[in-house]
Length: 248
Image 1 (cartoon, rainbow, N blue to C red):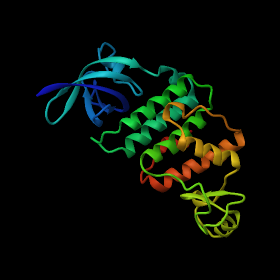
Image 2: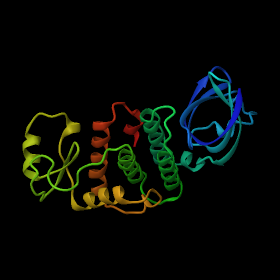
Image 3: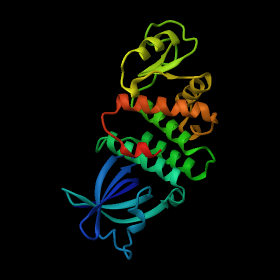
Image 4: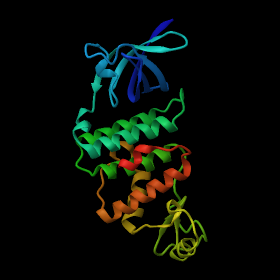
């Protein structure tokens, strides 16, 4: 039996009895862990501020062997501002749900934690559209997991692109897009037109440092295409349903 210190962000919270919570933390150095917040639902609880979704804090955890519980915590940022904007809240919830469902327990992923913090900070402070922050996060998150779309040449016929479309794992030419569109594929697998602004945005996201990831602008038309591309790419490589994506 011992205590341990952990800097972490709450990525999931569920009720556990009348007064307790079961908390999922994404921690620095230890990855995702599950802990209990004893009495965290009580208004008088000292740990209530660090047991809320989005809470970023320094925790003291009691390791009971088969379980761990939060003894105390020092809040760094609650990202409370997200709760005052519906669109930002939806994107924030989706980001945390996606990470929680994809990242396995106990796998160190400091790069993902830093990406989350940068995304939530951008939602909190940036004037960028929440949807833009969402799709940039998705593409970078997939890249950190080892999945990057092919952006040079047609992935189907290996010819020149010309007017480019996105399909499954990368760009395809217009001729291949017409052939694929003529077949009865599910809607999510239809080729999506990728104008030059979208291609430029994807390349920027992949090449950018995380701390500068959300420092770009894009037209509304390109954002619509980029949103569809990001959804298709994530769905292809993530074998879980992330329900909160439908609210973005």
